[in-house]
Length: 88
Image (cartoon, rainbow, N blue to C red; front, side, top):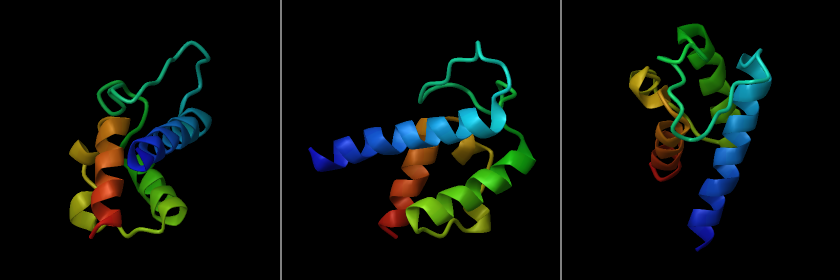
């Protein structure tokens, strides 16, 4: 139960960060399955900044080989990455 609640909190925090940093139009609605890269919301430069924010916020290390487009395509994928790194 706690893990599920923690995932919801993390989801909201990550979506809020992406909206604040990268979404310019008010009519863009993000959820955990929105395609961030294909949808043009973030790019490779944004991944670097987002990765740094995730590492600082969640006290994890994301190795270079995991800072991939695939791992940052959706908020769900980002949460999976953070959880894997927390348990590494």
